[in-house]
Image 1: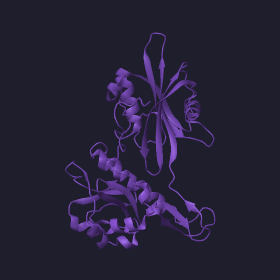
Image 2 (image 1 turned 30 degrees about the vertical axis):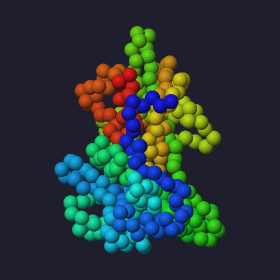
Image 3 (image 1 turned 90 degrees about the horizontal axis):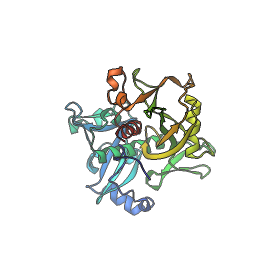
Image 4 (image 1 turned 90 degrees about the vertical axis):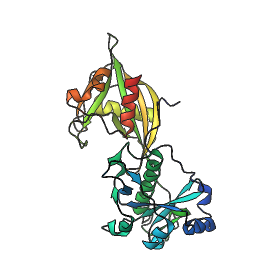
Length: 311
C-alpha cells in the first residue's frame, strides 16, 4: 500500500500505451500519416517547450505535417501511445547540433530540460515528455548489439532494438533505485529524519534523502538496509514502501521507502557523503533559516520529506 499523499511528478500519464498495437504495421503506418497525430520532439536531454520566459511553460507537440517537414522518415521515432483517439510519438532530433532552425516557424519555442521547470508543467504533459525522453535516450545508446557488436535497428514501433547480424533483440532498460527517508525517535519522543549532502549534489546547500541502485539478487528492502548502512552506518528496521517515480534522466525508476533507526549514531562514508544530519519537523519547515535547501520539487525525495513532515 502506498503511503504517498499525492501523485509524484512524471506519474499519471494520460496515455494508453497500447502495447498490442506496436507490432501492427498497418496501424503504425496509419498513425504516422494521420494529421491528428502528435509528435513530442526530443533533442538530446531536452524537450520542446513554449512560455519559458513568461514562467508558464507548456509542452509543444508537432503535427504530422510539421514532423514530416523536418525529416520524420529518416529520424528515430517511437510510438508512445494513445491520448484519447490521437496517437503520440516521440521524435528524436539529436543528430543535429542546433535544433532551433528545425522548429523556428513555430515561434516562441525552445528546447529545455523539463526538470528546470519542475512543478510548472502540466502533470500530464510532463509525464509524456519524460516517457519520450527516456525512450529516445535508450534508442540512441543501443545502436549496436551488446552480444556481437552488430548494428541494431528499431522494431515494435521503437520499443525493441534488433541486431541485424545475430538476431538478438534488446528491450528498453530501466534501472531500479531505492530512495529512503530514515527516521529516529529519541527518549523524549522527539522524531527526527536523516538528510545528507552528497559530493554529487550541484547545490552546496542542498540536503536530501539517501539513495542507491539495487544490486543483482537483492530485494528492495535489502537494498534500503544496505545503502543506509554503507552510507551512514545505520542499521534500520521497519522498511515501508512509500511510492515510486519514473526518473528517465536517463533511465531509472525511483522506489521510495521509509525506515527506522534505533541507534542514531552516524558513521558517514566520506567518499559518498560530505555531511549528514538529523532534522526535526520544525527544522525542515524552516530549512532556509539553517542556510540549507531541500531537493527539487519534482523529485520523490522531496515528496518523502514533505509527507514525513505532514504526518
